[in-house]
Length: 313
Image (cartoon, rainbow, N blue to C red; front, side, top):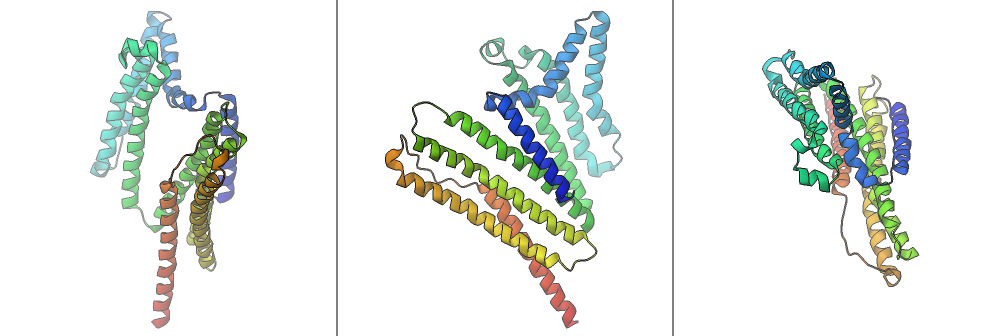
């Protein structure tokens, strides 16, 4: 995917999520409903159809069975033989889980005790069941990626890496919006000073900053991959240097922002209603950027070594 198209997609995602979280009052509580929504919608439709009489009930049962059997049918239509056996097993498992989850979403008492359903929102119970389906889907995707990685050539592997980076950028954009949305919702409580709000706002921004920097690193990495796949590789060294610079800058900014926050909190401690002593670093972002930086450095050194060998020959 080209960077311009990805940029438009991320911008649309960013605006859509901001509008969504602005509409939804309980941001944290909206996540279970989003997770469970497809299954809730499907089960509600099947339940309404079954209440139309014997014919409607029979049609709803047929739809329920057919939808649940789709992964199993796909598993038996696989043509990759033994290499795809783990994926086929997971698809059959997915069918079995879908049977229970779709029916259970319409009848939550089959998933959880009646007392729990009466004392808690059924959305949470449905979400718990829906997560099992999503987790199996993720397992299937991972197994498929492993097989593709093992069988792919250089050009295919670069395309797969490009796709993974695009998916990561979509995830980081969602995280970049979700953290401030939930943070500002919980920080706007009565009885706090303006300095408290300032420090709280800075914490929220600093927690979201690594994801924004991760996206910048991804765009630089995609630029490098475009040069690597192009026929003319004259500018590839410049793209590697740009990627190295952005990775280094991202690592420095992530670490510096946390240090600045702790210094400000210490200097303004007299004006704060509470002081939190934390030494937390976004390890996932730091590891991601560090790995990209190391890979770019290894690629750069490998190119120089190859060029030196060619000159020697």
